[in-house]
Image (cartoon, rainbow, N blue to C red; front, side, top):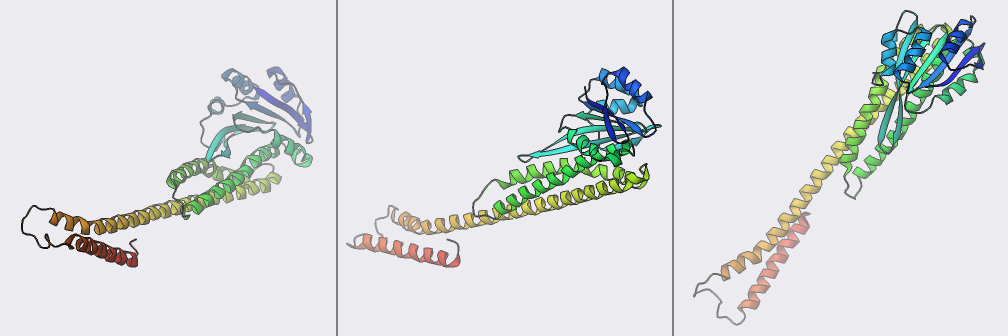
Amino acid sequence: MIIDCAVYRDGLRETTAHDNGSLQSALATLGDDDFLWIGISDPTAEEMKRVGDALRLHPLAVEDALEAHQRPKVEQYADHTFMSIRTVTYTDDDISTHEVNIFLGAKYLLTVRHGGPSLKDARKAAEKLIEELAHGPTAALYSVVDKIVDHYEDVAAELETDVQEVETSVFSADRSNDSTRIYRLKRETLEFRRAVQPLREPVHRFAVSASPEEARPYFRDISDHLSRAAEAIDSIDHLLDNALQAHLAQLSVQQNEDMRKLTAGATIFAVPTAIAGIYGMNFEHMPELDWRYGYAACMLFIAGLSGFIYWRFKRSGWL
């Protein structure tokens, strides 16, 4: 459904009706420096067709905008540009992405949002920049894309915080199931990369060829933010790889220590087991069977030899 629709004359907002006929009327009355900004959320096929017919959008672009499974991209048609971009949110080690499809024409900007955060803040921020909006719909496009891309850096910062928590846990004395969280963060980082990486080249094209020319520095700023977000993702992925390797190394060391302790304990108990096994055999003539102090001497010998073995293992660090 259409959630917001307004005409901007010399950078100032004039709210207009949302129905199809009013869109066509609004377009017909636009002056040289005016443009129409329409915001749609989760449209039906019928609603999208009506708006597409009113704005004369290419059918393939309308189809792409209706299906929320597009890779971030920019496509150029005869009289308008189609951009697909993803919003990113991060909560409790879980990254969620939602699609925003944007149509940029000479006299309009249409945003089609499929879930995710509202774009009202981007519109409000743009409406404060009256001089920039007076340059046309490209300024509105910048405001929307800039709002989405700025949040990429916030998500990257939150991910880095969680990675630091994982690193601290890996090297702590308490054993925990860090591998599960590391794999989960790596999967979410991959999802984040899919939203950011494909967008870099199209935004760079806007930075060097956007019209009007006054808009190009703004898109260069977005391109810089995208580069920082992409570098942060690469850094996070590298840190997670290191954390996983360190975690596996810690587990290997811990297993070796456990095996040494088990081996030392088994060796200590092997002494009394061997002696008891020998004297447990049913032979008539065995040494010291008739000696009054034979049992006490045997127990003292077992205790002394076991104590000696324990001391040697303790000294060597096995216990």
